[in-house]
Length: 121
Image 1 (cartoon, rainbow, N blue to C red):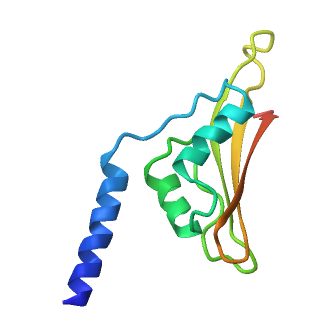
Image 2 (cartoon, helix red, strand yellow; image 1 turned 180 degrees about the vertical axis):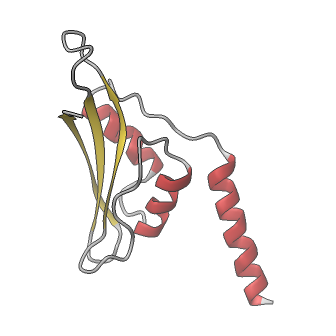
C-alpha cells in the first residue's frame, strides 16, 4: 500500500510539473531580473533533485541541461536560456545567456548565477 501511495504522489508531482506551460525567460532583460525570475522557479534552499525537475519540465531552454543532482562533492547545473543579436552585429555572433545553479554540501540550492557570452558559432 505504501508503494502505491508513493508512486501516486510521484506521478502527481511529475504531472503538475509538465501540465503547466513552460516558463520562458526574456533574455534581453538585465541579469538581475533574469536571476529573480529563476529564483521564483527555484528558491534558495531547493533540493538539487527538485531543481533538476524544474529545469527538465518547467523552464524553456536552448539545449540540454549540463550537470545532474547527486554529483560527487557538490552538484551544479547549467542551461542556455536563449540568445539574441545586438543591432550592430545583427548577422554576426549571438549573445548567449546562461544560468548556473550552485549547490551546497547538502545538495540544497546555494546560488544562481547569470552570464552572457558572445558566441562565435
